[in-house]
Length: 581
Image 1: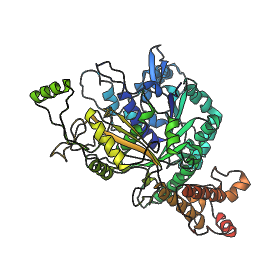
Image 2 (image 1 turned 90 degrees about the horizontal axis):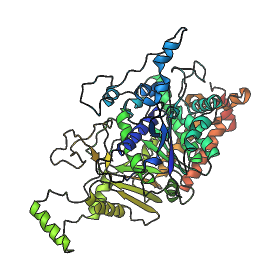
Image 3 (image 1 turned 30 degrees about the vertical axis):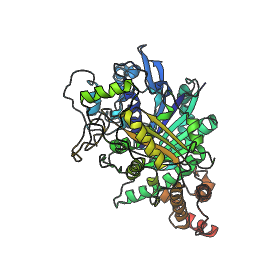
Image 4 (image 1 turned 180 degrees about the vertical axis):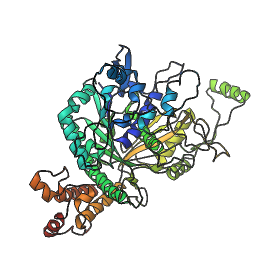
């Protein structure tokens, strides 16, 4: 029996924006049309059957999404699964006083549009898109939504009233307290995993820059403990801090940088495969997202993530276990890079509409097993086109971590998708020319399924036809696209050493500098030893261990030993710790 189900976990707002686009894509595959042909995607991998409150059958994602309550927006009001949780009915029955703690979230224009999507076109009103739940198309089971309490947000908090929810250690502490009180692993997670017949593993998306990095780290540790033999592939997303000159923004930049490094080290230790991500502008002139807009930047990341993992959800699929073992065949390269290109550049001459007489002649020759020569693609030119348009979304995870040129990967898994049946041969030829490695170091999957564009997908395309092909002479015209061809890959590569060196240099600068650890969101080790308040990082000693872990990773990715400045003597550290507040 082959492994089947994948359970998805998502931690934090930035991660949930990516996950929402991912689930919207899964929902779009369920519209097969009138042909009745079997779907290419096995929906049972990511969805589970159940019953709604009215006894009707439901089909919901195998997922847990962790976020602050407000990000869930109007999901409850829009989802029939929440019928048993009618807030208005509860208020009507309650005879006591009611304290209004916050304004109710009003539906976005897209949420209002969804109510009429299958009926007549009507004019809708609503606020602009703000939360990821504003454009979520998949109905989510109530068990799938985990509300995290944090200061300044609605509901109780596990932190002191004066705290802000910014640091990895805070997120880790909140997760520990949540688990004590709510037993989320037993009540929510096991509810999903025990429904599976034979799990492939966990696919996790986590925000790396804020406190949700710590929430994700805590639950990843529990997964490693509870499911030690189950695959855990983690996509951790960096989000840039504000760049203005205010003290608050300066503090956030320092804290975010520390969160991202801690997440990199902790996740690499606990995951079977770790994929860092940071949104950046694609190389393609046809895709022009507003990277400051989470809805648009997340769509770019989700397009690559969903395509690169598509092979694990097909009817004829490769399991997560095969994917991770292929990429980490060396056993010490658990950090992979995600990249791709969309829409796929033209790798063969564009087909023109045939004259009916030409089509008839071709059919007559085909009946006699005679083929007519057609223009052939040039694999070398195709590989050059791929290289010029390739968009890596992992190297920007840590500032200054961009390699000068693309190194030959240790291993690579490439997924190419295109609805045009004539595209398979030139696409695979171009991929294999660009990376001439042989199996199992290179694994390629081609599927005749373009990336669907749901109505919730951003309108950031220019110069394209509806099928995602270039429109001659219309490069600057906004485009309405229904689907587009895509190539995406996961690869383990020596290029990751640039990212690791940047992480190591950051930790070294913190240890050798005279800023208090509190400026980076790390608890003071000296004080913590007295009041038992030390965070999960472990103060300066923990940072030293983290630096050693990064050095080991650098060595695994081929970095030569380098002489590093010592981060100070124990006496100097003790003097600095006296200033930590």
